[in-house]
Length: 138
Ligand SMILES: [Zn+2]
Picture (cartoon, rainbow, N blue to C red):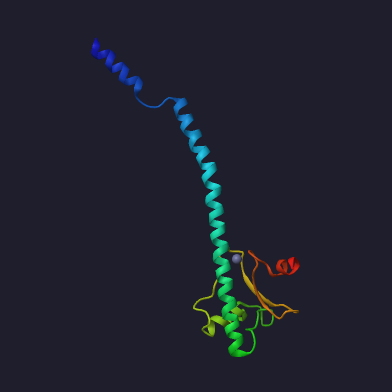
């Protein structure tokens, strides 16, 4: 008899109740709602920093190219518009760059312009800092 009661008690204690499961799911949900946006923001920040580093590298190598050639490499607008005519491809072909840098964001693409007033070179990324936006903010 005593053994039977013990068995019944053991059966009752096995598994979780529905309320316990709901509480656990609720806690997991709250934690996810806190963690996921932070992870996404950190990823976007990292992409933005990588893009900025690429732009600085391109800027330095463009200036090197200018010092040695007396002009900036031709932009795709001036050539056929194909990727072979892109100024980054010219820098890569002339060994100013080890590889053609690309923005971590798929839609990001690099472009450059020379300021008409100051004559300064500006590198922009279509996604992170478009050249036209920089122009209007100044
Ligand atoms: Zn970018």
